[in-house]
Length: 178
Image (cartoon, rainbow, N blue to C red):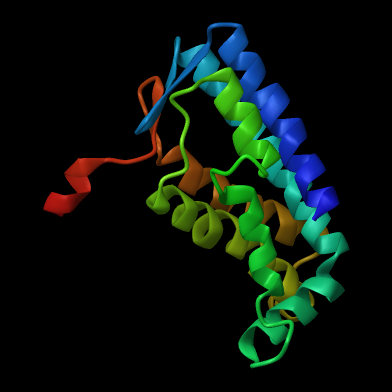
């Protein structure tokens, strides 16, 4: 968790806090609002760098991650260890990610929806990828670099879909009508 927190905090400082201080980003309760398209592109580049570093981390730790996944499915004393990654998605004072962003912009919150999104659509895909990496690589006949690049392209597509003009939507009430 210490290594994962370090990677997250590096991104928080360079990709969020610095942009807030430079006046390029304003956090609202339901969106990240950027000063212009250039700021969005800069943030997008930083997110991709962060996700690539996170991917490298989980691939390096994939043996441990496989054990965490197996234990999470059992009724054992370690069945909740995988959920320790949720420590990075809480809005408490003990979460350095939340605390640092909140101190930079008091409008920042982790809603229940945002925590669910972050865990199941950001963290779990990385964990699943790492856990199934060797098997998928063998079945697909992809090289390490091809498989990693394919995964990152998929993330890029998903993340890009959150961008609307110069905002990244964290909640969109229009989805209720769909």
